[in-house]
Image (cartoon, rainbow, N blue to C red):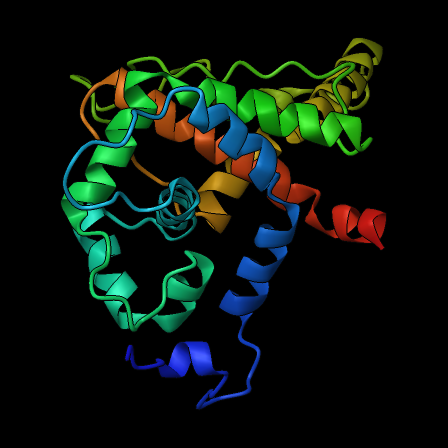
Length: 244
């Protein structure tokens, strides 16, 4: 008879509701799992002989855990063994005879990349949010296509782009022309803040401060998934109120 693990028996060593658990619960509630799984099943390979594959939902949940906490494939494998909360989110029981290893996690990421599913995941998330009236489309344009670009200071001269520093400090508040220019800059700043907010989320909330993979294709897929998650994170409170 299979032994029941502590994780599945309801026995918990601590009743404290941590910020990490709160975060995962909020994201679990707002992610449109059913719609995403329908999308993935259209491209998922048929099962072959041998060990049965892990559930598609489990692998998707593990992939999203990687994005939430900036974990590499080997680090994600170890975290599944070390962190009960991660196993709970991934729908894995600690009493299972095996868990996804780094190769399995890598293959799922390659599956997403091969079918360029990052853009499809982002579109699916946005469609679901739009149906619930939680996503503002009109008047917002964000080009999230990564391009190769040198670091601002690590160039041959070691200087920043001269067009990057703000010119507002040079404006004269006594001159009518400069007053109008300042008002225009304020409007541009408000628009820029809205456009740049998703970038702030993936950098500060999800810890994405530098690329992990080689090549634009791999990094593009990851960034598109991160933007989908950032959209969900930004509306998670309103989504909870909407469901209530």
